[in-house]
Each structure stands twice: as C-alpha cells, then as structure tokens.
Length: 334
Ligand code: ADP
Ligand code: MG
Image (tube, rainbow, N blue to C red; front, side, top):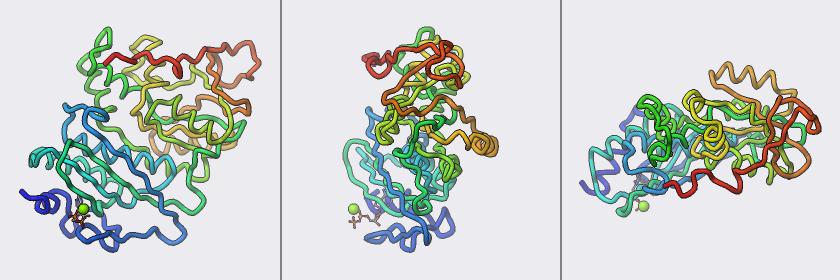
C-alpha cells in the first residue's frame, strides 16, 4: 500500500461519514476553514512519541483516541469547542491492522466531538503522532491562564492521579501491586482519557482562569499563578480521591494527585459568587467538580490540612511542606 492509498483508505471519510466543518477538507493543498462570525479561532498542537509519551504495549485504538484527546483537552482548557484537526503521522512501516485500529480510535473520538480531520502529512520514520487542533470560542471569552484574582476559589474536575497510578503499575513500582480490576480501571484513565470539552464550554463566563492537567496538578496550577501574578493555598483534605487511589497509602495518594500528570482534568479558578452555578454545571455534566483551595495575593503555593474555609491565620489550619515541587517520589523508578 503506497502513501496516497494509505491516507485515502484510513483517514479520508466517505460522503456522509463524520462531521463536515471545512469549506475544503482533506485532499487539496490546503484545507479552508473559518470560525463562525463573532468567534475566534483557538489553535493548539501536541505531539506524542513512542517511548516518551506512550508505551509500545498500548492498543492502537487507545493510542488514536489519546493522541486526539490530549489536543481536545487544550481546547477545553480555553473554553473552545472543537472544529477540526490535522494529523502529522510518522510510521516505521505500513501495518494495516495497526492503522485500522488507530484510525478507529482517533475518528470515533473526533466524531463524538464533531471535529473534522481536514488534512495532514504522512512520512516514514520512528512512530510519532502530531496533531494540530482548531476550535472556536466567542471573541474575548476564551479562558486564559492569566485571569485568576485573590479571593477566587480553586476547583479541579474529576479524580486526578489515576493515570500515574497505572503508570507506576506498569513500571512495577507499586507495593502492594494493584488488583487485576484496579489495574484495568486505572489503565483506562491513562490510555483513554476523556477530554473535558463540555466542561470547558460550560465554564465560559464562569471561570476566571483555567488550565488542563497534563504535567501534574501542582505544576500546572503554578502556571496559572505565574501568569496571573498571584499565590494560592491548597487544602489537602479537600482533594478528590478516586476509588482506586483510596486504597493506597496516604503518601502515594498525594504523590499521584498532586504530581501525577497525564490526567487531562481541568484546574480552574472562579469568584466565590459563582459556586452555585458551578455546582449546577457539575450536576448537569455528571462530572465531579471539587473546590480545593483559594487564590491569594501573596506569591507562592501553600499547602495545608484542615477545613477548606478557614482563614490563613487560623490555628486549625496546619501547614504541610510542599515536597512535590522539589522531590518526586517516583523519580528514577523507571
Ligand atoms: P503535499 O505534498 O501537498 O503536502 P501530501 O501528499 O502530503 O500533500 O498530502 C496529500 C493530501 O492528503 C493533503 O490534502 C493532506 O492534507 C492529506 N493528508 C496527508 N496525510 C494525511 C493524514 N495522515 N491524515 C489526513 N490527511 C492527510
Ligand atoms: Mg505533505
């Protein structure tokens, strides 16, 4: 199978199949696409390289899903709704069964989010998948990292930390090891993340800042703090602990939730006046949203145990040293 047959066979849709968002799609020198009037184009790129971003054991369908999911997660983090994407694929060889699974995982997720594959590039070389995704967001309503203000609440979606738990299970570094059931469930979080697109759109006009968690909750929250020129305090007792993590040691729970990475949940900030609307949004999406801390004027990140809504100088609030920015429990465990 030659390059053009491969592209046509696996990545071009027949008429009536999949969404049509572009004026000119796949197959010409350029695709032509425009956001609706009053909307801005949101663009983001993420590349995945074998061995670095995924294990060679992952199923091709899950890999196709994840390659697009991590890009849709960036759109979600800025409140954009997906329109289209391009695919730069580098393949060591033409393996039709692999391509079939990969294309299915990729295009099923694309269809779910009404996102059209409008072009790409295909070359031979070590396996790598580069995707550029395009979305639209009403002008001036994009959620940015720079909008957090002192007094804002800090929220996180879902149950971060499960992907890291699965990665450590793959590395064989968990003692005790995960049960078979726990391994399959956490592996799903790692290999088949669910981009929080509907949440991002729902947070337009509600959140003051947002970011998706790809490198770990603390590290990604730090990007919001830096861009917004604020500090924060985070209540460790308010962190959402997913069911499979609940069975692990307290240290492991914190390592995975705070510094796990690959979660693709959203961390966002909002004025306290928005709490009721955020709780409504959580119910309408069927997605757990947890309030985990506060934005403060004083720079830096403070961690504490105790009640979420006590004042910073309250003796009930006991400070916990932040060992996660300087020490990674799992470092070197590979
Ligand atoms: P060019 O030589 O003009 O760059 P290519 O031969 O690379 O064109 O690609 C031919 C057409 O196929 C283009 O429309 C391109 O967007 C599309 N294409 C190439 N690779 C992919 C891919 N992996 N997925 C989707 N479309 C692709
Ligand atoms: Mg080309």
